Image 1: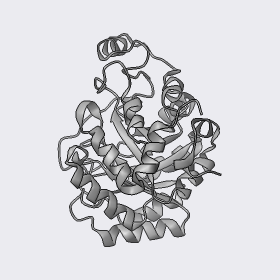
Image 2 (image 1 turned 180 degrees about the vertical axis):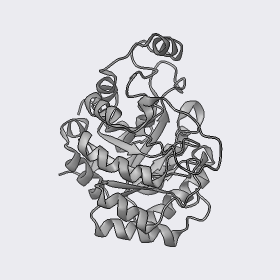
Image 3 (image 1 turned 90 degrees about the horizontal axis):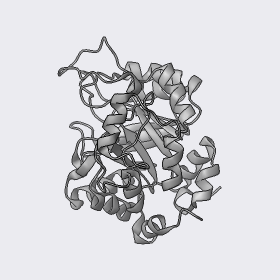
Length: 312
């Protein structure tokens, strides 16, 4: 097995979920996941945001607001943002779109799915989302068929995703999805409850999660280093990976902020560092993806991941 930061495109193409997990673990905290909104005009209008993120150092690509029941991506083939919207209205879909995206970036690709809790006590008005974004048997089977390498069971702002609904969704995902399962909350998702504690993480592990999602240091009030260190230590004991997330729009902060967050989370021992989608055109500022990469693995490995041809 290779560590992820030494992998070629051909290695990613043939990896099993277990091998991908091992490759991430072997990289010792030097893996970056870049999240991007699927419904925005891409930063570079005639290519996908995934290609741009990959070009500046992203290892894993996470699609947000992607509809698994109406699969389309702006920037693929002739799908500009205008005819993307026209195709959506006409009910057109592209069942091969994720395989097309994989051929362009040659990186593992995942999708956010949201297990809505209709009984959750909300702190804000609930945002209603399409069925294709919710975490259900139907969308899990669709995500599996589309070819996603991993799913991220989490909640966008105001959608009403609770920890209890995440726990149930993990168990369901183990049955209907065959890739890696990431689960947790980047922020409250509008629900009046603690974002994380060890009891919640234990329930995630008991139900079969592969990677625990936890907020990055400096992103959510009250989530401190002691709390996160306890979760990371617990995860390592259970042979589960961890991913810290910047899901609070700080992905558009200055490079100094990104550098500090990245280094503080690496000290805690996390396996993956996620950077969110609230920069320009539905992805983190490109200089911040690059800065995170340089901070946690240096210019040598950063340039290697950026420059390594997809033909290797």
